[in-house]
Length: 197
Image (cartoon, rainbow, N blue to C red; front, top):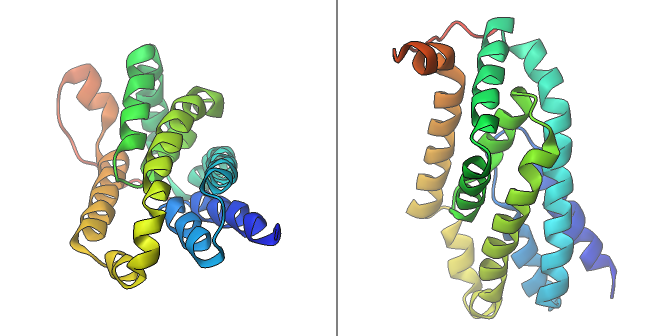
């Protein structure tokens, strides 16, 4: 049966292409693995490929979307932040891997990268390492999840998922409303809520 693997790919792609915090892609991967008794390693490889393609597409279209939604000053501010992060070299890559390992949505990471017009190939290799590692841990628990499907459904609305979503929204708030140029150049913390066109 090959078609559930196609759903794994499409599900991971769709979960990771959206420009707002959403369920992690491993949830659809795990659901389909359990429902159809799929091979964990095939689900991992196909799902991570779908995730990476989804995040790649997100970084390509988000600069155009942010140009229509945000004022030029906010886009320039986030681009300035991106240049500073790129200047950190391997430390930025280590931070991306670490962030990808955390149980937090990676949407803010790719929104920031896309808005900052950082080339996707700068972010994706480190994301791949973190994603492959964290998703393999999540999928290896598939046997446990199969026996406890009710608790898996309940965990979607658990305090951990609510904390993860809240942290993701907080990161988006910080990305969008902090004046990064002022903070980095003048060491002055300033919030700017007048960022929309």
